[in-house]
Image (tube, rainbow, N blue to C red):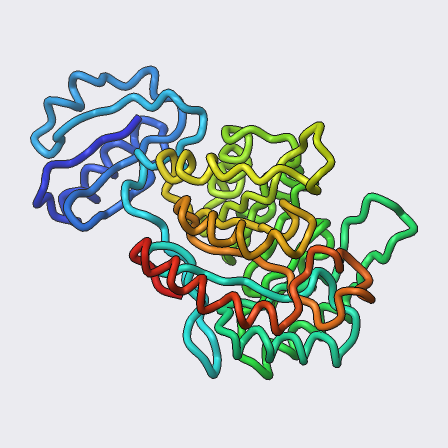
Length: 341
């Protein structure tokens, strides 16, 4: 249930009203926008008298929410959520609103020289975040599984030297203590419905980048975000990374249509991973521009200094030179959408 308060209702009046509502055994999501305050009632609202609420002197309207996701619903939070990551020695990393967040780096951390070099390259090109896998979920148990804690340490060294906030994937709850200094925790497509992991991340006060599952619907993605938000962590970034298809021409099928659909349904920022979606580097620039045109709030792009010899996903990685050439074009596309990189 959504309660929209009348314009010019003060925060004090709204908070007092919330205290009254909480006596009816529901939790309240308080969203103070530029013009109005919106209260989202989460829990069993069947017993609440909708007509009595509508008659309250502070209430403009009452809306029953049909979708199963509540806190992720734009009705609960009309204004876009903007994720801001403080950065030492550089500008803050921002995703959402009028800022287009660019996350770039290798699929996996392979050595100190590799990650430090790439971090500096993507920073100079204009990326706002550094990505890199320390723990890698691989289809084959014989494939490179990542450097583990050592790779995580190297990522944090690159963060210290460049000032770029770090985005890296968490695969298991038991790894969480190692991620204390990670700025954005990524949940991969294979873990999108690992509900015990999502619940734990709901208690973690750091942004979570949630990738869409390989065969997941939009509602399933939003319900996965709801698991995190239900625990009190509202800083969730949704990521479209391609879904399964019968066609093998590309690694996956990039579902650009989900971007405007998500932007209508949720206030959470939506980014796109054109690298995993296509699986081929030459498609990444075009799909990156298409994603911006479709309304994406950011991109996560794989960049490797030697793709031919990469230990993971080299065929979909841009070289630093190609990434540097692409960034000015992405800025122009962002400007057309009223955004800045």
